[in-house]
Length: 126
Image (cartoon, rainbow, N blue to C red; front, side, top):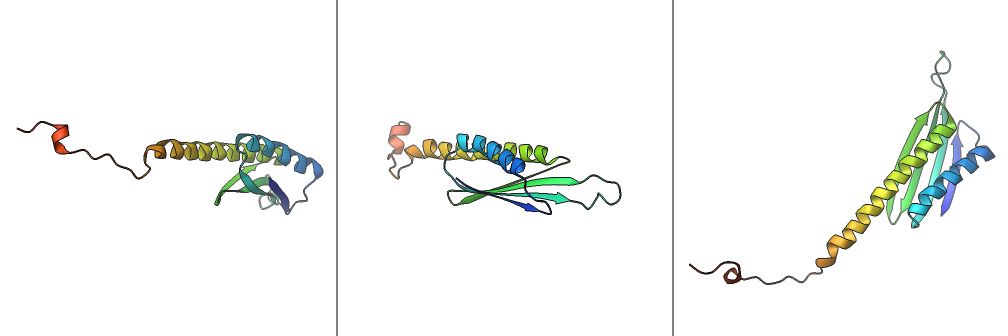
């Protein structure tokens, strides 16, 4: 799994990098067909100048089998945002995996062959 972690208005520390990678391992345990994950950690200072709190945001774009999944989490602490982002991504992965398995099982009988049923077999002629 290819993981890239970058920061926007924030420098990514080794501790942040380690936290992200540890959380993403949980996601990978549930689904091993992940091609790549791009994580963007950002800091929004717009509310900090007037006494408001800084907003920490963690975003992830995950690529699996021709499809992209996007999640984002905003918290007052970067590590909380990372945890929320990983939980949301894990939830999406489990839903995706369930849908893929359901397609396989429901589509098993639909291989293009149809059974020919005539009206005489359904009900006797009156």
